[in-house]
Length: 116
Image (cartoon, rainbow, N blue to C red; front, top):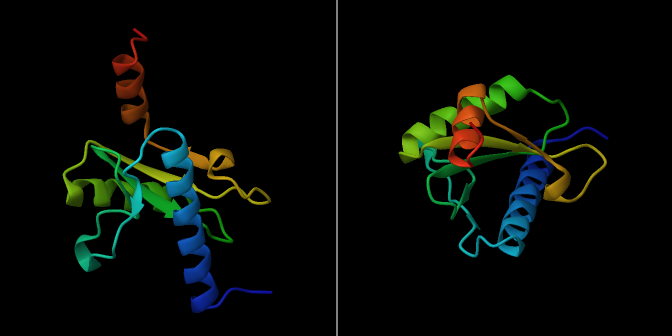
């Protein structure tokens, strides 16, 4: 069965909700779905200070487009980090999804965690 606009929107909403549940359970109690902001969108999930999360639950994986969108939305929000959290086919939990960041951000996070 192929997706139409309504089923794609429902899948996206479900994935955003799952990401929020996962973040809350892991210690980010303020995680919540963000309202759409049009041309100056600031990501799909809020509540992690300095981080914009772009949630993706698509039938076709496009890592480059997802990361580009997360990067633009991080700039719109004034956040340091933009990440795309992509649903993994066949897995329901956000903990099993892919979180995509660029290499510069990865190195920054390694340094901040004390890996030098």
